[in-house]
Length: 88
Image (cartoon, rainbow, N blue to C red; front, side):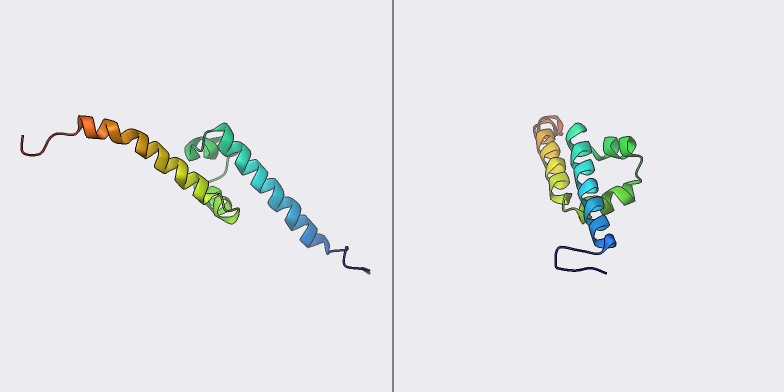
């Protein structure tokens, strides 16, 4: 029997602990592998589908997408210089 508002059911406490672990684990992996999802996937042993589900669950998708955009922006000067000129 639970008394007072400070006591919560086991499953609520467990969910909170697991969520915190997942968030920290993903952030650590993303930091260690510089947001490279292929490396995170290999290192964690998670499938890409499960990895993306966890990334979305913990609101980390913006971080991952921002990193992908940044890496593409870095490639733009290379594409611009090496692409053939039209009408040449």
